[in-house]
Image (cartoon, rainbow, N blue to C red; front, side, top):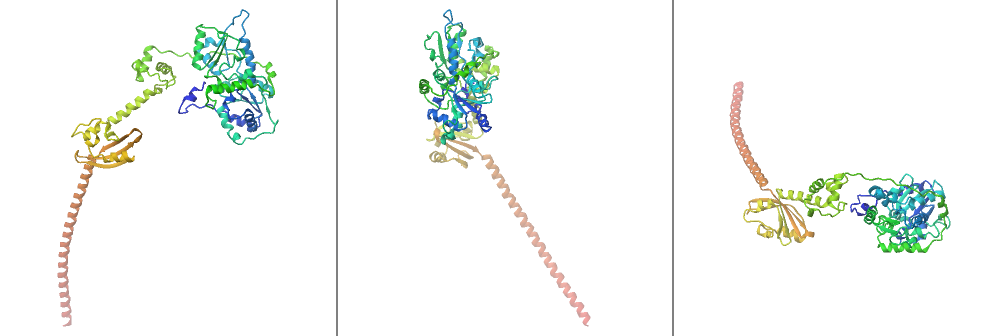
Length: 531
């Protein structure tokens, strides 16, 4: 729940569980909404004054805004008792701070030996929610706003009194319209609560902030560590009994909470740290509701959530590595693109079912390139790449089959030695793609159809040349067949016309003779009648 995947993934495949709608729904229902504002807000909202932020929140319908530093100060006092020497002058056992939910997750899963070392008290967020519910009523809708993604998981716990967790980024987006045209409430219409003299709680977001009020301790008695990798180193040292400090302040984010994944602002770590420390020293004069926390139960317990994963043998690891093209130690890039520190760690994760072979970026790239090479090498089309000076940079075997009958083709050869490349030159000069152009090469006894593509960003011109000679021959044969068919049809028609004309002639002569005979018969009949 550290949020590193959300920040690092360029495809934004991981998304934060956005609970703004819960807040919006509560406001629409007319519920009393109180926001617990993490003290790191002074670094997350540097462009606006504290009063303006409070007014914007109140103007947006929030009933009250309280700083989580109220509860952090309460927790700080308890931590102070853990840092006190025992009666013998030595700590009974090392205490590890329990403010950071990521640290708790890590210890419960990977360092269960240290569970008893975790401070048995809830985080300032959970403590503040209890304080708010006690002060305003159990029906109060409590919203925590901070830079931490892991707080979303912590706020969803069984014993949590948090109703919604939102990040500073989400809060900024939600308040974007009110900031552009803020609705300022009348003075005193809403209460802005905080805590007087809570400097100890306001410094919690920075590395070393928890122990700042107790700076009298020596380095041997207290350890402050930030960043997951560094924290894990300290935990290893504690387990191996390399050292035994009285107290360990452990924060998962580098620089502390001000380095949280959802701060919503990019600034130098020291700049953010200075803002928080300056605010810590400024003090506070707002109404104090601290006394109500004296009767709250702030205790908590932890449980082992150890992952009992089967560790593969060396032979099984090697076999998995081979499947991603890693046959030697030199092949192991350890680029961490898959999310694991080493190729071996990723291979173990594959064996345990937590990762897939295809998560290896170099392997997938080489695999894609291999597929592309196979396609190009076995293509029936000639594929050739030349630079702007018409020097051949790459070509596939089909180029040799088409144009290698007269001279040998090689990389570095000028394309003009093979054929007229005016179309290539035009494509390089004007950047125009040529598609489906028919080009005949009598010298090679072939007819082609070409697609020429300029790639100016790489200074290349790529051509895909399709041999359509056989197609052309079939077209010519078909055309010849059509011509012969037309000629035969014409000949038959002419003969039929000739026969028809002869028949017509014979019929004409017969008709004339018949007519003449009939006329003579008529005349003969008429003559006999008259006599």
